Image 1 (cartoon, rainbow, N blue to C red):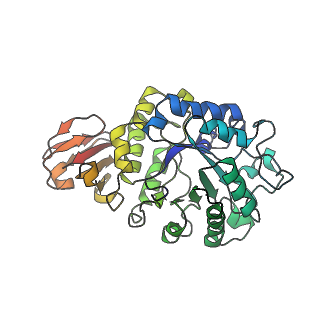
Image 2 (image 1 turned 30 degrees about the horizontal axis):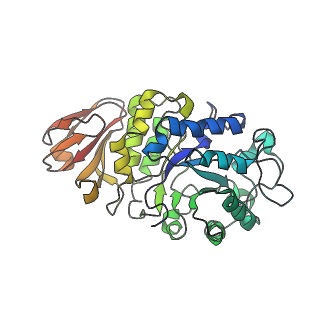
Image 3 (image 1 turned 30 degrees about the vertical axis):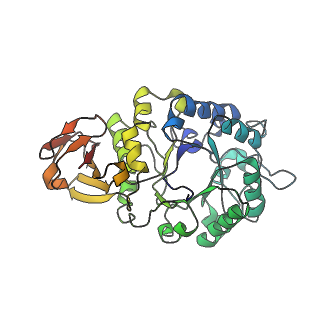
Length: 372
């Protein structure tokens, strides 16, 4: 079977580790807090719903590599070391992911307690890949952060080099690259990565969600099983996103066949956020592949329809998001915007809707429909 045959699902520590000013607060990223989040992935039903990758993002590293040149955990925050954390997380039934960069400096090194050390993988690609494989890592996030500023690297060469080293270990490791869509990764990354970021960072506000969505319009031909467009990690449950905005965000990422990497505090997650993240009908749409990811299929002012075909294995038909980008309610005429269908079902509520009716969508809101 193809590695990452479906869009990967999991939890990543980066958004969890940001403060209210979107600056990293690495005091939150410790052995204890990471194990608590991993346990919560199990206890809240996230793992059972398909969120299998626990990804330790930037900020875990000690200020220097060990005597063998290997990355190691922060001496105070990860006293038992990263290999032990990997073992403990995997004992819960999860898979483990880790972070590095193709340059010399990571994103974390712009903060005061990471001023020293050669923590990036430049000239350490082999030793890092071998260490990750030895530790039992299942997922690597490789981040372009600062490489173009400090190291003058060619992105295709740099990302391919780590891909080759990971493959040489003989271990199945999902390879996720984050170069923010700067060099049209959708045109070259599918050949040797499993997912690639298509945009700059996504933040937990409506404007950022819509800007990121707009950059997905022309990318639908490039995704396929084993190689996915990545519009960045989920912000569901973070910041000041409203209930309507959280739903719209999650529905859209599902129709885009996006990797679903949560980043909220799972130990304090509300029931509403939990029920959204593990909703089986939404996850089925994200995980189903019928030959093409979702795309913009209708627009009128601030109203848009993003839709995708569903496979016969998933019941066929179409999944469609009716998106209202504006700050006031909007009305969709289903026949006009979607065409002629015999049945329509609201995936979130489970309600049947007349396929010939008009539907009102709340401000900054969305309705996810299954049509047949």
